[in-house]
Amino acid sequence: MQPSKKKTVSVKDKLDGNEIDLSLLELTDVPVKELTAVTRGTILDLSNNKLVTLSISFPTLTHLMKIDLSKNKLKELPVNFGDLRNLRHLDLYSNELQRLPVSFHQLKELRWLDLKNNPLVSTLAEAAGDCLDQRGCQEAAKKVVKLMTVVHAELEKKRLKELEETKTHQMAQKQEEDRAKERVRQEKKAEKDKRKAEAAKQQAAIHQAVNNKPTVNHVKPEGAKNEKKGERQQKKMKPKIAGPSFCAQFFTLLLRLIILAGVTMAVIFALNWEGPLTLSNAGKIAHRSLDKAKGYGLEVYDWASPHLQTIKVQWKHLSRFVAENGRDIVNVAWERTVHYAKIAHQQFWETWPIVQQRFFEVLSLTGDTAIQYWRIVCRDVPIYYGELLDKLSHLFHGTQSQAGNRS
Image 1 (cartoon, rainbow, N blue to C red):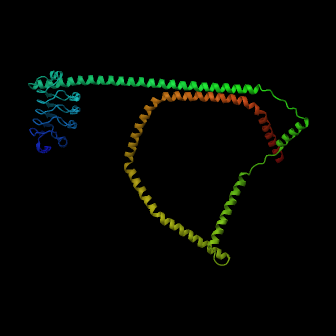
Image 2: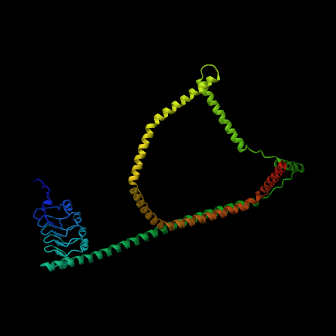
Image 3: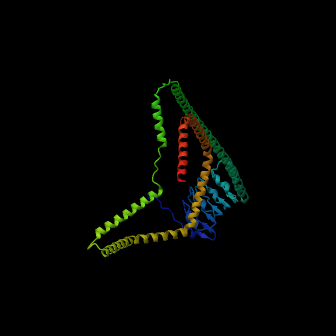
């Protein structure tokens, strides 16, 4: 048994005024693509076919105002059926529908509905009624749309409640994670403080041991003391040898460049020298060297010209592209910038409390460290204060003596 081929229908041939008659054609699928092209047809008759389902693209036919789907085998309608916002007349007589999609509440323009001979659930069947006349079908449309509006409101309320519960659960989980992180941080901080206390205790014990150590007074002869004192005075009186000045360094560099240029010219003359050692011969060699340099320059130019031309053409293309599409590029860049700015703003307010907390922790740790080192400096600096004062005094007196000699 060969599979049956999909039946093709010419929608334009079935168009009569604003009505498209596709009934009694044994259709299993609705030609949505062809119907989309015929926007003049606002009435669509699909009765007496073999339709079981409608495609998800069927509700894109928003220009339709009247649809007849009676006497098919429809088991369900697409979830986005409510997108047919201009629909006023809908015939679903004699199908296999049990429920309607929640989006049915969007059909605010619906004025006529027939749901007879369908295995509807009790609440929907009660709202649909019998639809025995024009008035009954109009009442059915109003009641069914109203019922689906109530169902949509209840589902939306339930969805929001579930969303709120999920959000609350996520927040509780996040708070629990933050508390766990805070506990770990406090444990690490306590362990670090413990190590600091132990280190400080050991350092204090070492200092105490050093301070309690008995000092041995070495008695030196008076001659040795005077000799050592004289050496220190000679070291202080010894003039400091200054380094080369900026002018000396500049002229040294200039002299080196002149010597390098002279050596280069000598090598060129030695390689190209011909004939006797005369001034005219040296001029000829200089002209010959310049001609060779010009030749090398022309070769480099000939080699680089095609590349420069290619770069010039590409630059013109780029300039033309930017001139034609600059506004689109700027708009896309602006949209991206706004999008990422919103994301950054959201992320900033989410991460700011953590950053603030970490910042104050680092600031506190930095302050403790600075105070500790300041105490060390205040304890050790007086040892070198006398020596520093002697050096500054010697420097000041030496500067005054040099100024007096110059005057």
